[in-house]
Length: 205
Image (cartoon, rainbow, N blue to C red; front, side, top):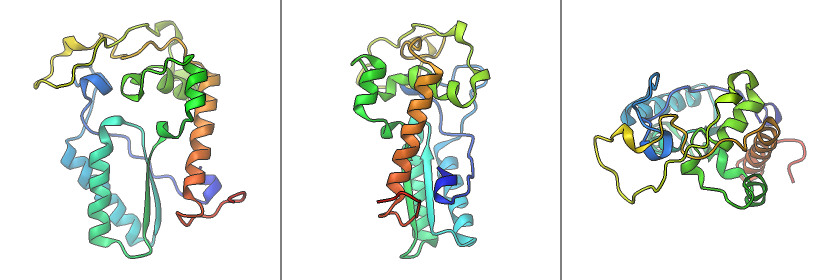
C-alpha cells in the first residue's frame, strides 16, 4: 500500500493488554503489552514527530482489536496539539476491509466474528502469506472460547480461554486465503486514501 500511494512505513510493534475474549489474555508466556495511557501517548508523540517533519497525510492501520480506543485518543490528542486544517489521519482496522462475500467464501457462511478470530483463520492465513516460515501447520487446533459472557470479571482468570489461546478453529487457514485477504485489505486501504483523503495513486477514480 505504501508503494502504491508513495508512503513511508513506520511500524509499531506493541499494543494494549491482551484481553481474554479478544486476544487470549495476559497469562501466556511472552505476552508483552503496553498500558493504555502509554499506547495513547506513544501514538500521539509519533504523530507529533511526523507532523513536525511536514507530514499532513497519515494512515494508522490497526492489527489488534484491543488497541482501538487508545489509538483513537492518540490521534485526537495529536490533532488537537499539532494539527492544522490540512492534516488528515486515516484510521483503519485491516480486517474490516474484507468483504462479506469473501468471509462467506472462506468460512462457508459461518464467520464467527472478528473478536473470536484471535490466532484463527484470518490471522493465521495472513501470516502464512506474509511470513510462511512462522506458521507451524501441525499445531493448528480446533479450540474455541465457548460462550462469551456479556460481562468481564477482573482480574481475569486464564481458565476461561483454551490453553492454545486460539478462540476459534484455525484449520481453514491457508497461504491462498491469506494472499486473498491481504490483497483485498490493501485495495480497501488504497481506495480509502483517494480522493477524499487527499493521496494520489494511479488508478484512483
